[in-house]
Length: 185
Image (cartoon, rainbow, N blue to C red; front, side, top):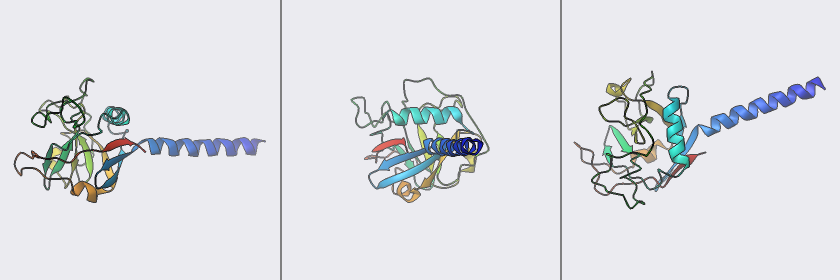
């Protein structure tokens, strides 16, 4: 009897560990395919929670990559002005909006901004991140401990590389690619 209880506890703990791990994997669907992103709740719990909340409620679906600089990063996540499915969509204002939720306090960590890192976009105020985020194409050490990194692309980075690039200086993209959908795995 004790052995059966022990096996049940072991099985349940392994199952729950796998479920927690799965809940921190996101699937970003682009026109070119699916990208897997691993989130880091131990490093930036509030940013991870916000990202999952917006993603799983469909807020990122249709949102454009409004600022894309070759060799640097692809920025998206403006759910107010950057959502091409919304009546409020305005490409000229994309990058200036966010969600209706309050801004987040910075969660700086030791995560280096290397290729594939997902990080929160913000204004000059470190505590102004809301819904926007960016994915690094290459290492950007000047962003380390200045922006809240909260995840990393673990599969499909070659699809991120295909996102339409913008103006080399401003990153503005005239006819931008968009997120088809973004959900927890």
